[in-house]
Every structure is written in C-alpha cells, then in structure tokens.
Length: 397
Image (cartoon, rainbow, N blue to C red; front, side):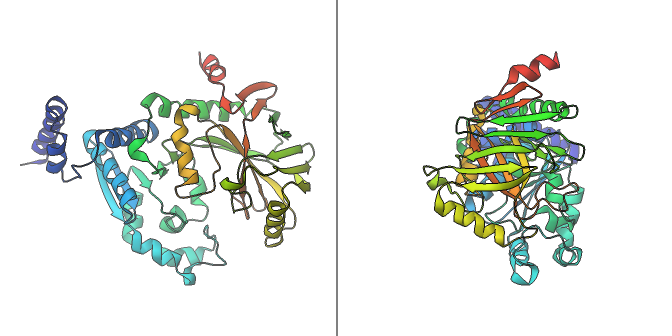
C-alpha cells in the first residue's frame, strides 16, 4: 500500500475508533501502546496542539530515558501525534545522558557547560541530526540536567533560548500526566497572556512587587534590562523572566515565604521563618530569617564568584490556577524544590555576570513569593498570585 493509501486508512481508523470505541485497535495498527487511557492521550493532544502549536504533517521528536513513567508519556505523545496527522518518533537517550553525566565530561559540576571544547566532546551526531531536522522536539528530562539541549546541539546556553519556545525545542512536564485536568483553552491562554506582558514591558519604566509577607521590591526597567517570554516548559508553566540591570533604584525588601532552589529552603521547611533580603542598587545588603536556612545560603555564596548576591531574575508567572497540575512537576518531578507554583512569582539571586542573552547565571537560585501582587507602571497585572486576565483581554480588543 502506498503512502496515500496508508494515510487514508489511518484517517479512517481514527474516525472509526471515535465512533465505535476501537481506540486500542487503532493504536495497535499504528504500532503504539494500546493500553494508554483516553485521558492520557487527550492530555498529550492538548500539549501538541495548544502548547507546541503542532500541525498535521509536522514531525515531532520525543527524547526520553527508560523510566516507565516517562516512557508512557512519550507513548501518549506519539499516539496523540498520529491522531493529529503528525509524524512522531521516540528516541531513547538513556545511555547518552549517562555518558554526559560521567565526571570526565563535567567541569566542576556545572550542568550547564559553557566550554565549547567540552560541549563538542559530548556531541552524538545521530541525535543532533534528528533534533535539527524535527519540526518539534520534546525533551522529557530525567532528574538531573545531563540530557540538555546544550549537550545535544553543543551550543552554550541554548537551553535558555529553548525556554522561550522560539524554535519549538521544549521541556515536558511529565509528572502525573495521565491524571491532568486541563483544557485546550487554559493551555492555549498561556501564550497571548505571556506575549502581552512581554510586549508591555517594552515601554515600562517600573515593575513593583509586593506580598502579604512583606515583600516590597521596585525594579526599574533601565536600559540594559532584558526580559524573555518563557513558553518552552510545556504544557502548564509560563512566565516572563526579567533579567535586571543592576544599578540605582533596584531596591527594596524581598520576603521568601515559599521554597527555594538548592536546598536552602526546601518544601518541607516553608513553615519556618521566611527569608528576608534587603536590596540596594540590585545587590543584597542584609539577609535574615531562619538561622539554619540563612547559614546554608551564606555557604553557597562563598562558593561562587563574584562576591555577593545580585538580583538575577524576576520571574512573573503567567499561568493561572486552572493549571495547578503544574505544581507537582516542581515538587515531585525533575526538580523536587517546590518553586514555580501556580500562585507565586519567583525572585532569583545569583552572581549576575556575563549575562548577555542568558537568564541563568552562576549560582542562579529561584525563590518563591506566595500570593504576590505585581504592577507595571501602576497597573496591576498579577493580584494575590493570580494573573489579571481582564487587563490583557481589554488591551487586545
């Protein structure tokens, strides 16, 4: 049977399966897992259509390891892609990821390597060629950061570029996918909401963040300040990441009552006294809070150059509570740090050096502020941790 005949048969079987309930027969015919629940595949379909903007005829490459949970997610994406008339392929990169994790390939435990010679040594040509050729690439990363686009393409900091979804090289939030309660409308709304805020910042002069716990931070949008729409963590999370230029006026108080990266304030310790930072000209001048957590933070500070913490990022979360399935990815998935929850924004401290085009600098440490209110030039865009949809919808009219 020729390609046209196969396509017609596949299409007819999709229609028949919807009418007669023979979904398992269709999947067996197409060589995919027939045991996936309808909800599992529907969540995958929403991911491909609403988050990846996938179209019939496009190719989608799914990168995964051998973990059964992540493999099932890859198979659900495969089944959904076939239903949508896309061309899916799954690539197991377990061994490659292991090789990249070998100490001989890791310089000072930097999971985001920047040395070009080191990156060149990690290239796996068949995997790189497949990723370059695919219309959409979805990486289902295991805990740890060795299976990265920087390793795959041998391009420093390309993971930051991929976070914008500009080239549709995505990172997949696999946790509890079979049970997600999501809709196409909720996932699709991430994009216009994020792009509207990203555009609004072009002419903004001041971003002001407050919270019930006491945060009161002003971030001037000085020349040299950059910001990026983050739509490449799919299908639930989105934000606009502001990378401040440190200087006069970037000041105030940050109170972290959520959790942080790097084990400083883990999810099981958020009932302790919050961390409190005083900033002047973008640099931390005072730290207080739970003594044990403060000690951990200061120990980290001593391990990195240049000296002293700077304001590295202000992450304005643009997803809304109808995508709260997001939270499990950050608490029991790849990250296990409890940040990036649906009703927060995150402030990152770091060393803020060599930042051209890069969101994550040395020691980048995200920290969650619960129930924040964010205004841009006096206009509230996030209220008590929830994005104010009426603002961008009114502007879009």
